[in-house]
Image (tube, rainbow, N blue to C red; front, side, top):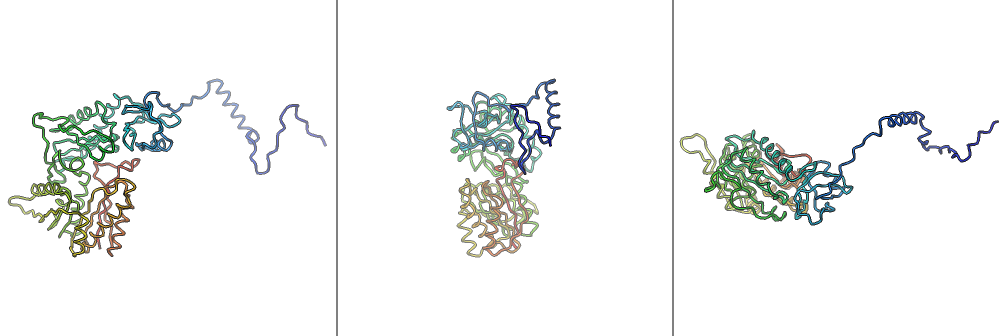
Length: 469
């Protein structure tokens, strides 16, 4: 038997792979080497293939964020929390517009910077922008937001949200239209830079031709963001000597008074417009048109819509000022003269909702329709547990007072309270009240408050339409 030739001196001896072990690449397929040779020859002729390197973080003003924040931004979110900001360059930057990079130096976009806020960065573009380019982009996006809302406006509904912050790619910017007035909110320090207000006014004047444009603060946001109080005078007015500060606007054909210097938020709750109409329609469908109750009624939005179909309506709110406006709204809408239209008997009660519902449910009061529209109970994740106790209590008392076949419209405007949370609280209340509750509809905010799936915070308003059997 011939012995195998010995390898040349110095050449490494090839080892046979152990059983179950993959062979080295050079042993697996000679075609691989052949293909590699062809690629090498092609590369020699044309040069190596060009691979685009990730865009690096610009050297000037910028922020470096954690991998967790970078992953959120790449998934479509726009926020970076202060705890995820690793570095601001320069450290004492006064800039409100910063480039953003991950901890490898890869560029992620341009963001508004708010040093006092828990939301430190709000991304406005995936591209690098200077201040002039940002103002130009802001104007274009605001015009686009208004164009999306114009088909929603007519004589019967001449009020809506024209710009909804992140949902319209303008983080921190809210613009509402109330009849002939436009109201602006700047909810982040990054929007206080020079030229932002002027850009907004230019667009609003051209697109809406309002009587006046005002800026209103949100007291809670102003405190959280460290914002100064805006000026009391209008940002712009058609009549500088006598600017219009109050007007009348319409939702679903009903008239409402508006005063730019009063009320919550920007003055009214436009996000409930379609839910007002739905409550009215469901009451009619179910025949739940006897006695109706609007809890936390504010200026009478649900109550006035129910007054068109019910025989008697009661509105409850803890704010006397809100109830005074509700009464003005009632008088503005009551049919006058020779008309066959009949409106409900409407009364307003100043009271704490929890206390009065506890008393009335214990006393055996009965209603055909009840609406629960409380303020946000959970303004942080830590507050959710307590909020759910509050929702359960309100719904329990309401279900004890609803007649069989009655309508319950129950709402939550807390982003941190999920659909499952709200439905669980109502289900627990139904069990305690020994009532079988049938879901008719799940509803959200009106279409002028759009929900963006990448931004779960845009879905904050939840409305359940229920029949208590």
